[in-house]
Image (cartoon, rainbow, N blue to C red; front, side):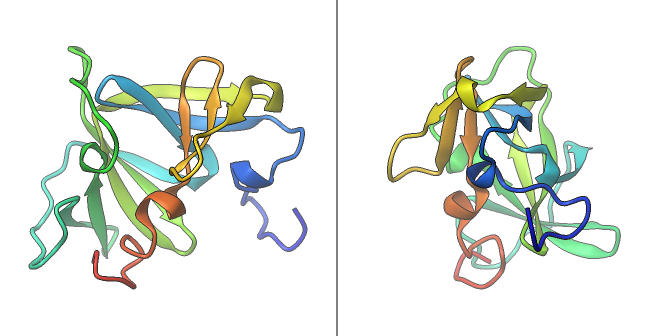
Length: 156
């Protein structure tokens, strides 16, 4: 972890032999997760302001602490069956590098800790880094969103 800012954990892909804490959430009938170090806060359901010419997966933007944050509907990017009947939709504010993005999910599934032994590689050519023993799919946000969420490409 040399060269990292204090308090910033290494991404899942760079952790050899360590455990990782994951913010787990529902998208449809599947559980996905991202490294908890990427999560800034979790918001209740929000109504974003529309953005002209935004791609279908971008719902719009919300203003959080004076900054416009794009909201991405993960149901439009990931395979999604019906959400659990007890689903309480939320928006996860996450960091991709120095940028923030809001991830609309069907509900929260808690914080989970996995060791390297509990993770197997995700499918090739997908944004899933690893799959845990309990079938939680650990996402690579950069791979899933690319430059679209970072505001450098046609996505926003």
